[in-house]
Length: 628
Image (cartoon, rainbow, N blue to C red; front, side, top):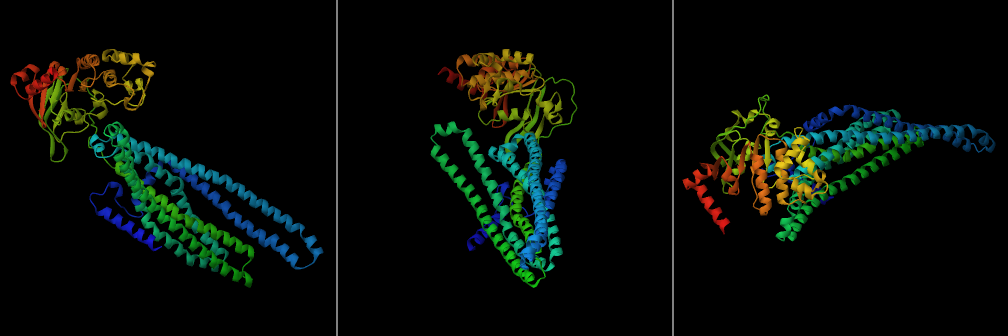
C-alpha cells in the first residue's frame, strides 16, 4: 500500500514537472482532471449522431427496467407462494400441506416464468446495447478520423518537418480509437449510470429507509477510493500515449531506413534503442496497471464492508419482524445493482481519462491553422506562366535566413535553371513557387498576381512536379500516373507516355498500366521511376514545370531517355529547373547562380562563362570531373 501511494505521489510530481518544463513534448502537457472544455468539444463532434445516442439511451433505459423487475419478482415469489408453503409446513399437518401446495406451486411457476421472460428480454436488450453503442462509437470515430486526416492534409510542409510521422499515425489511428471506446462504453453508459444510481437510491429509501441510510452513510468510502486514485489515471494514460507516439515514430523511421541500417551495420544499436523505448513504454503501462490493480481490490473491500453492514442491520430487522425475507432479498439485489455502477465508475473514469489524453492530442492538430492559407481570388483567364520573384527572403527558422532578397523573372514559356552548392537555397525556390511555404518577406507573382491570392487547388493544378527522388504510391501504374485528376483523360495519358518515353517501362511489365507498384516504387529502377514521374507531370498538361533534374545515378542509355523526356516536358512551358548536371543548364533561357541564399549571378550559359565567376568555376569543376 505504501509503495503504491508512493508511486501515486511520484506520478503527480512527474506531471507537475512536465507541465512546468518548456521542453516537455505537447503530448505530456497536463490539463485538469475533468476538462469541461474538452468534454463539450467532444460532444460537439458527436452532434451529427445525436439520434444514435438517444437510441442507445433508450436501449439502456429498457434494459434497466427489466433489471429492476427481476428483484421485484423474486421478492413477490418469496413473500408470496414460498412464504405460504413455509407457513403450511410450520403447521405440521400433512393433509393440509398436500391440499394447500397446489395453488402456491402454480403461482410460483408463474413467477418463475415471469423471471425467465425478464431474462430473455435482458438478453435481447444487452445485444442491442452492445450493437447500438458500438455502432454509435464507430460512427463518431469514422467522421472524426476523416476530419482529422483532411485537416492534416491541409497543413503546410513546415508543420510536418517538426513532427515524426509515427506520432501523426498514432493520432489518426489509436488516439481516435480511444475516443471510439469512450463513445462506445464510456460517455453514454457513464451518464446513464448516474441516472441509475439516483433511481436506485430513491427505490432503496422507499423499500427500507433505515437500510438505505446505512448504504448512503458508507457510500462516501466508495466514492473516496475513486477520488484518491483517479488523479494518477490521466497522467498515467498521457505518459502511455506519449511513449507510444515516440515508439511509433522511431519504428517508422527505422523501417524506412532499413537499407542504411544494414549497410552501416547498425542493427545492434537500432535494436538497443528500440528496446530502450519499448522499456519506457512498458514502464508507463506498468504504472497504469499498478494504480488500477490497487484501485479495484480497494473498491471490492469497501463493497464487502457495505454488504456486511446490510446483513447485520437487515438480519436484526428480520428477527424483530420489521422486515420480510423477500423484501430483504429485493433490497440486497438492488444494492448490488447500485454498487456495480459505482464500482465501474473507476473503469469508466479510466476510459474517459484515456480519451481525454487522446482528445488533447487530436485537438492540438485540429486547432493548428495552416499558415499557407488558400486565396479567394476568383478563377480568371487561363494562366500564361509569367513568374516573378520580388525581393523574396525566407527563413525556415527565425533568424536563420535561407534566402535573402532574391529577385528574378521567368518569362512565359521560358526555362530558368538554378545552380549552386548544396544548401544554397535551390530547393527552397521551388517550394516557395508551389506555395509549400510562403516568403518571410517579399512576394512571388504569377501573371502579375500574388500567389497568395490564388486558391491552392487552382494554383497547384497549373504545376507539373518532378523530383530528384520522386514518390510512387503502392497501387497500379495507372493510379500513380492519373492521381485521380479529372483533367487526365486516356488521350492525355497516352500522349504523356509517348512524350516521356515511359512506354519503355510498360513494355517490361506484363500488366502494362495495371501493373502493381510496390510501396515507394521499390520494384522499379531509379530511371524507371523518373520516367514515370515525368509522364505523371505531363499527363496533367501543366503550364508550369518544376524539375529537380537528376540523372547522375542512371546508365547512359537511360540518361539519354530521361533527357529526351525532360525536353518534351519543358517544351513550351514556364519551368524552374534545379540543375545538378550542366546538360539541362546549357539549354535554359536563363541560369540563376545561388550562393548561401543570395542570387549572385544570372544570365545565359555563355554569358556566365564569360563572367568568370561562380558559375564558371562550377563548370570547370564539373568539366574536369567528367574529363577524368
